Length: 489
Image 1 (cartoon, helix red, strand yellow):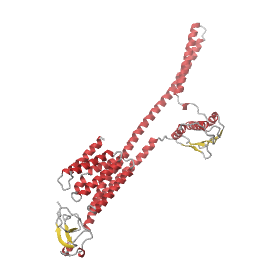
Image 2 (cartoon, helix red, strand yellow; image 1 turned 180 degrees about the vertical axis):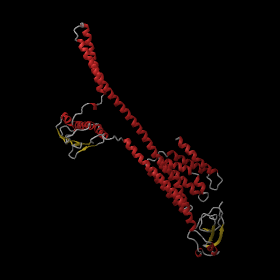
Image 3 (cartoon, one colour; image 1 turned 180 degrees about the horizontal axis):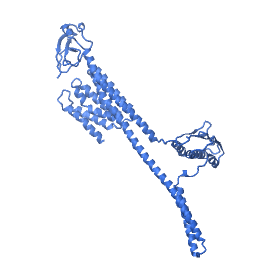
């Protein structure tokens, strides 16, 4: 909030300066207060309602410019330019879905052009509106979108770093457990040897009864210590250290009437074998809970496709947490397989898993999110460069091109000007099909007349580019013609 307040104060400087200037298009006090209030509202809601904030800023800029286009267009453009650019950037930065803000930009562009063509200034004003919305609205908005994608990539990077730290911690814990297992084997061996030696000492005939009793107590203590060590290591050891039950053993131990079809004749990788064990045991447990008495078929193909299918069964009141199937899906995903579980057409249920021959490299959601975000930021960067280039090239080509078009199509040549005689009807004069400007600054038309202003030559870039031919009509008759020499500078 403090950052947005600082930005609002920076944007407010030019608004206040537009009221303090002595130019004819200066802002009135009430306009300054109104614009600052509108901008404050835009800056407050831009994080939650970026499209609304962008619409407020665009509307304020268009009103400020179009109202003053015939008085002082420079003041109209500059007064709210920083505010519009900042709001556009923030709107692009905070918009989760860019469509609403893009619609706001398009609507403002369309409305500004329509008003310019119908009410204020004509085609030259429409071109200025298009350029202004492009430079102050579209380009900052595109950079805001890029900045959002970059921030998302940075967030994913921190998440990935956290995941790597957790994986490193897990690896350290696993290594410590393995080391503890090795120490158990060594220490257990030494304790067993000590118990054997103390037992032999207990049978020594030269010892007294009390010495034999002491040896017996020592042997019992050593034996108890070895048993406690074994119990502790049983807890520390991973389940994967023990032997893996085959699918036949899992089926036999379930107590269900199961039809087993095992098409796998070769050995299975240890981790994959544990996954097969886990899926089969969990699926059969679910059958016992939710479909007791149902016919069950367990199929394992040669390419490690596992299916556990049960037929329909009477409705039961058993309610599962759903975590078992979720855990199976996660387990299968971790080894690089695919998992599905869904009801069958006959009212039963089927669990399906396709497992690889060897565990594949783990792909976590963070990796996928990072790759997706990297792709999005590359696309966003390309779009930003493309939008900026299109706007800049459009202005660089469009503005001079329009100036040439405006001058060439509105030329009243010196010969045509000389042939125009006072008192002639307007329809009898040889006039261009369009005027250069409607109401040029600093030129006052005679009362009760309607004046036309034309270019004097087709070059809009030389020192005489502002010269105009003025023809004024009253009751459709020419009453005044004048060459207006308006040197620039």
